[in-house]
Picture (spheres, rainbow, N blue to C red):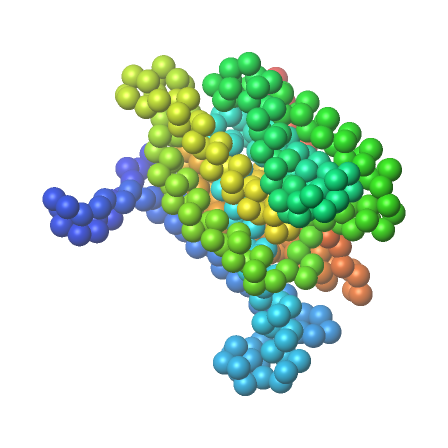
Length: 350
């Protein structure tokens, strides 16, 4: 099988002072295929709708020779939204891959362990409970951090108990959602509606500033996640095996969780806690690559494709009506989660 083949080594520089990069063919192929899907979905998005630009005219508009309406539709409306969708999808996927590796559980994504619910609670607190204290995106990031700290304290062993993290995360998420529902019920109707759209996950009216925020975070966090990949592969074999080869499991898990929280926070700050991308993208990647470990690079490409395609569906599935992209990902992710649960149940019953 392909996963049994030794990885290829790419050497940069001389043998004494150069850098060796280990890579496998299948994850590279999966990552490239995911990027192709994302590009195709982006082209369909740009060309669809009332302000769509025909593909034959797209190179001209990109060169700056189109009409003012086409320039506005592409550079102010479409491209920032697509860039945020791709970058946020990649950020969610990287976080999901790290959390699933840390918990050694296919359901151990930021959604399941309460990170998304904590972000929603933080956003609601900033918008409705203590308005004006901090911006809504900052409140979402603070809420996500508080949720992770609560999970860390609730396990009784920090991040050294992966299965406890999942159970504690479900409890933290339930409490956060209860707070969200209470705040929305007691808040101003117009403000509550606006916040409800945001916490469902929305890419409406995204700007190049939003793209710069999440893109800049990716430039810093993806290399850190790649550095942690080999250590996480060892930790997945168990703490005793990791310690025996000189890897510190607690340190590696803590570092991975911090990177995952920051990646999720960056994505949430620009588009809200979009559901299930962090769960589905790494799972799809693992099944396609048949590799061990988090598979950060391929997962990031898959996450970008998932969110760009989901946004295309959200905008044009129903003519004349747009949905928050989080509604689409929740529907698709719910089906995939049911598939995972049934599969795990059958496997345990066999």
